[in-house]
Image (cartoon, rainbow over all chains, first blue to last red; front, side, top):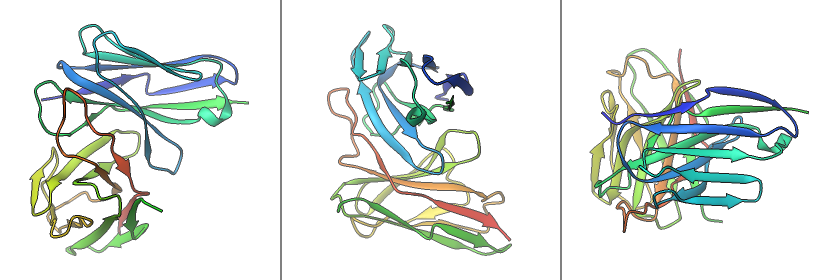
Length: 113
Length: 118
């Protein structure tokens, strides 16, 4: 069955350090979405990548979709305490007409001031 | 203010009891979803509905039931057949239940319901 794995599961960084989380799918994806869940909160949509090799930036966040559309990464430059939370990737298998997402296991980011 | 409302925020279930979690959206979205989140894990899809009066099983539907009689409402019943119901339940909606041109609709989430066993 469809599996989406993320590494690392946890990451502690000093404020100002960079952070990267990696997402790997067992099958080729049509697209990938990224969500952020603050402690005690609900997931909030960040971005969607559709094209092979696509790179998108949102201020200090850089999102990348692999050439084979089976992996993705999120990189945060110079982390801030507001970046704390769990980051999930969520993919849709190729050739699936439904809007269903398979969520990754998530990476919980802690930023130490 | 448009959004998704889940209630109650906390819910306790006795052994052998069915409980129903409410999810209402005023975003005029066609599709709605129910997820289960266990500590330290990702979201797993329980049921989804692409349109009113239609719904499909997700990955972990056993022990759960849903209905979609109105566009804005998608209640989830946790039945006594669900032997390990303690979890955080999240409801979500999206404008459409289908992918278009390789692109999917973002999902908007409610604040969740924490269900525990007494």
